[in-house]
Length: 282
Ligand SMILES: Nc1ncnc2c1ncn2[C@@H]1O[C@H](COP(=O)(O)OP(=O)(O)OP(=O)(O)O)[C@@H](O)[C@H]1O
Ligand SMILES: [Mg+2]
Image (tube, rainbow, N blue to C red; front, side, top):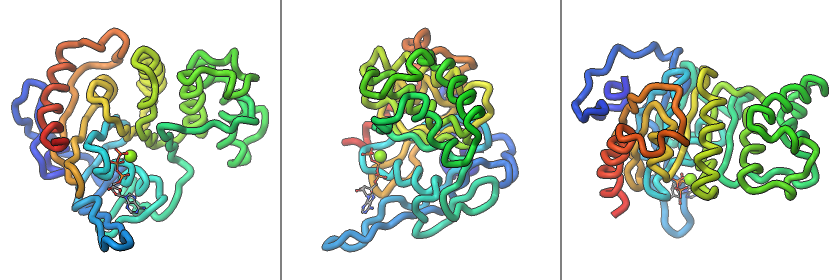
């Protein structure tokens, strides 16, 4: 599906080229980008082409990692899916319907998702539910369930400044997922965490996702993170971004980042990705 949809060769983990199976119908793709280009009008520099004619089709329930050099257009892709901006050309759609503005079934988490300092942890997690008019009792039970799964329920009444950075990121995950979004847009959510904290938060995040059936688009600079978490990794070129490689990570689930950090199969895929990416960075 990836190869046919994107027009690039899809590799299996043994490096051979795979014949893609027949893909789902457009209505079954949680995310579709067809011929999508984005140009920004930069004062004094004219038109800057950030994204160049991208095709990407993501079936519902797939976990896709997006990697590429800094400034290549990864955040721009997420912003279009979130309905925060429109492409200059092409169509961005979800389940066959063009995205024409922000949607309630999307959760978007940024690298430095700032929590609201004067709200307790639980009140932070409840924010999106409050905006949607969910009743107090329901808000509390949903927030507490997520905090428990992320092992920070005992901090429910604390304030963000009382928590470590890793714990704050767990709260930001809970806040993003409290509305039970169908599409999870994650823009380098763990990029600022130290290595040990990151692998723990990755494990907790993956445990929340596995079995959820939700679609994830996860931007990261960290190839190890991409292969540990994702079903499929998309390598983008430097600006203007095109898709350079579309690769499946055929390693069974559930996965445990803490145990699989040095899994040789994942490391082999990571090496292949690095070979592609390093040419783009140079
Ligand atoms: N509003 C804007 N106006 C002008 N140029 C923009 C705007 N937003 C993004 N760009 C440019 O478009 C390109 C892609 O930006 P984007 O933020 O999507 O990259 P990125 O891949 O997310 O980068 P990073 O890895 O550093 O986060 C960059 O060159 C950026 O400077
Ligand atoms: Mg970015």
